[in-house]
Every structure is written in C-alpha cells, then in structure tokens.
Image (cartoon, rainbow, N blue to C red):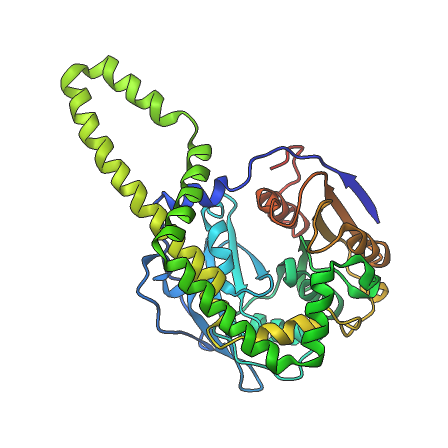
Length: 387
C-alpha cells in the first residue's frame, strides 16, 4: 500500500454550475440486441434515450443504465452512491467530452430502472456487471465506485477476471464496518440498528420522509433559497468574465452597442434564472426522485448490506493491482480511519488522501480520478499534472 497526501485547494461546485448554464447535446448510441430504451421523462435534462436504457439479465431481472460522454470512448462503469441511481453521473457529463470517456452508470437492484433482488449480497453485483458487459460487447472496462458504490467496485476487483477489468477506483467510498462500528457516527450506528431490526418500518418511514422533502422543496421560499445557492456557485465559477465583457463592449461599440448590450443582458439574466430553476429540478430528480421511484425498500436493504461486516469476500483476497482509493481526511460519512483499515488490508491498494476535504467536497477531484483510471487502462499516458 502506498499513501500520498495531496492538500488540494480547488473550488467546489464549478463543474455542475457551468453545466447548468450550458446547452447539453448528445447523440444516441446504437443499442445492442439485448438492450432497449425505456420511456423518457419530459424534462429536457433527461430527454436523451441514452440515459434510460435497460437490459434483461440471465435470471430475468431488468438492469437499468445510462451512458454519458463519447459513445466510442474508453468505457468506465460508474457505480452510484447510496441511495442514488444512474442519473447521479449526470453532473459530471460536461467534463467527459475532452476526456474521451464513455461513462456507463448502472442502477443497482431496486434503484431507478433495475429490478429488486431480494437476499442479494455485495459480491453478487459482480455477476450483474459480468452479464452487462457480455450483453453489450464490453470486453474490457474500468470500474469507478463513488460513496456507497465503492464496495461494489471492490467486489468486481475481487471476482472479475483481470483481463476484463482495466482499472478499479473507489472514490469517497463507503467504509468497511469490519473496521469497527466505533469509527462510525452515532446516527449511522442507530440507522444500521433500525435497518437490521425493523427494515419494513424503516422503509415506510423513509418513503414518507422523501415525500415530505420533495413537497418542502416545491415551496417558494425553499425554492428561492436553493436557487440562490446555485446562483452563488455559478457566480463563483464564472468570476469576473461578465463584467469584463460589458466593459469591452462599451469601449468598442459606443452608446448604441451599450444599449443593445443592456437589452441583451436582460435576456441573459432571464436565461440564467431559468437555467438555475432547471438545475434545481434536475438536482431534486437525481437526489429525491429516481433513487426512490420503486419505494424505499432497496435503500433500506442496501443500508443493511453496506453496514454488514461481511461483503461476501475478504479484503485480503482482493488480488487486483492497483486498487485506487481517493478519500477526504475529514469525511464524516466514511471516516478516514476505516478507509485506512481497508487500504491496509487490500494488498495492492493505493490510497490518496485529501487534507481538509469531506465527503461533500470531493467532487472537484473526480476528473483526476478518471484520468488515473484511463492511465491504468492504457487509454491515456501518465502526466505530471493533476486536476
């Protein structure tokens, strides 16, 4: 195991803010004989058939998935966090074109478009991934698990053939509870206990809570607060470009151009407000709607799985080399002590720690993580720069 300390200082939220204010287009790729496109929602942010595909697994279950980026690019299978869905990868789509990546996000059982799988284990996910790859002509691919998807990426590293897996990454990964429950917060220990003892009641309560949150988010005062947050992030990302452009227009085009610029500025502001409102709805769809479209049973079941001390394999038996791990030192969701425990036991783990970063400030490093996977897969040469 090697450990690198990288105290990054880059700003958070720039990527999603820019994406919300930019027109998104993507061409649909040809579906294989084993896949089909489901009915797509009316929202333009999710209108592409590439985001709503399904295939039938050998046992008859449905596996939902979304494709982002270059259809001919290097394939990276994206395993979403908890609780989430394939649409979680939407906010990183804007960075994919210049990376040459074909990012394929899969819904785990019971989330999004995927059928439930009662009694499943974390290790069972590797079989679904194997079937997905075979049914879609993927001979070789990398896997990237974010948050709760991390253990599933590790399961693939353990169970799938080395020739099939081009790279393995765990990004702000869920922790192994075998490291000791004392590392986890009281809230998470309590949630685990309830999920283990009364899963049905917890599912009912969770569904009610999600419905209440969705209703609250539609209230005007709350919507305005959310929009202001997105606007502040967008302003931080844009910097002073808008002011500089207005000054240059006045110097070069005189009073008439300035008046036209004012009229254009009004239209631009209206477009900005509309874009921010659209981003709010998109975020709510990703966070509150799609993960629970089939109810909360899958979320409770996954909580039980992720907090289990048995993932279906021993950390010491993961022979894949290297298993890359990127994690914030201040992560309260997945304490760094538990992640260090994991890295010390996985024989070929490479842990990158980010000083001062938490679970929710890691997004700015996702592109760098993808680049490392591209290098591991032989799709990109190593460079001295970081992201």
